[in-house]
Image (tube, rainbow, N blue to C red; front, side, top):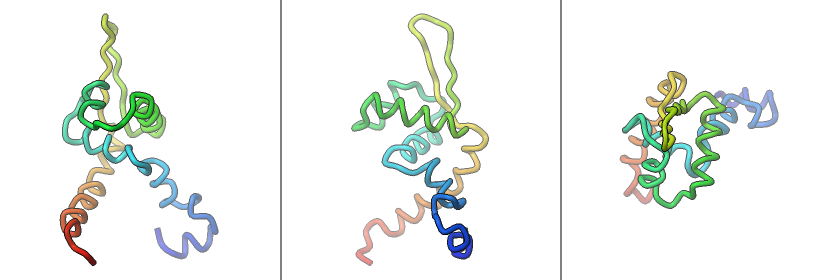
Length: 114
C-alpha cells in the first residue's frame, strides 16, 4: 500500500492494508496461522491446548472468520466421536512469506530498546 492509496481513499479500512488487517489482525489469528503453518492439519482441541490462554468460544469464532476469509480449511470426518481438522488454504500459503518476515523482524528487534 502506498501513502497515496490511503490519501485517495480517505479511510484506511478501504485500502488493501485495511483488508489485510481485517483478515489477519487481532490477538489470535496470527498465532493460529503460525501454529497451522508449523503443524498441519491440527485438530481443534490440540490447537486450543497449544495456544493456551484462548477460550473455546474465541478459538471457534476466530477459526470461522479465517475460514470465511478463505485462509483456513475445515475438514470434518463423519465418525463418532466427530473429528475435525484445520489446515491452511492455498491463499493462506501466500501469507507465509509475510509472516516469516514478521518473525525475522521480531527476532532482530525483540531485545533492542530502540
